[in-house]
Image (cartoon, rainbow, N blue to C red):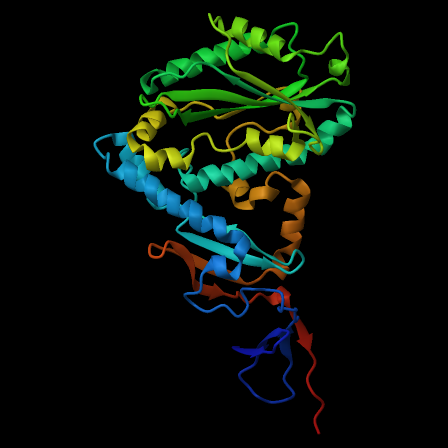
Length: 383
């Protein structure tokens, strides 16, 4: 058998023919598909992914930041853990295997290697997307089970600490949270909580650790007899943390769409809760502080679910499959649809990371030939 190819402006036609050129021979001809909407169809080797698919520009930015993080860890190779991080991050997402969904009319990631280092900007980004997908996928089920529930967004802080004391401070906050969530006045039916650490603007460069909590409360919470004022939240957190000062606490109502500054839209609250644990800006401006924080946060959990949310949200860190799916992760229907569409997404484009100018560039195009993609074309009748 030999492979023949024909290309027109609207379709690609692949044929399998017998090496015998007799018109009496039966041949297999591929089902044609409209390719006009596919930005990768006419792509040539060396073209950049972000030019061909603008929505994929974040890949360049996050992989570029990963290079910065890798360089930082590599420069501290005397630390065995940092040396291992550097090696793993160096190999992260070097090649992106992209496909095109004819049904969705968009470019999609199909395969990539992820290093799973917590501080890798690529992996932080993909895990953040996966966590958001988990919550957004579970949200309709939660709302169906609790149709009258309301939402709050809570931020809990303590005084800034020296970076050397960060681990013990977070341990104290975790114990404080246990006491806080067990208070009789604590109103949440369920919550998802994340930990964020930023560097203060002070000369000493203290660490600012805080919790972001998206919580679901009963509809009756807003009744005058049940409603908690800001001062109540401050007092509850102060007592739970056993502090001798009033900590900074921020509490906001979450609605489907925000109506005023004191409110957050639900999707914005989800994004704020599940954003990155560390900011890349802190790395670039304060590398020594960044390295110290990674040691302090080693093997600590970034995201925790509690209450009834445990019934709806899968625990554990997102795996490579979820990170590949991104915003569609943990969606059974999306996964089923993806499997059904696989035969219609035959082509794959491999984009390799180019160190200069720090962008993903097309390296190869792969179009596998599979029997199920073809229909039998009957032989022409002899003249």
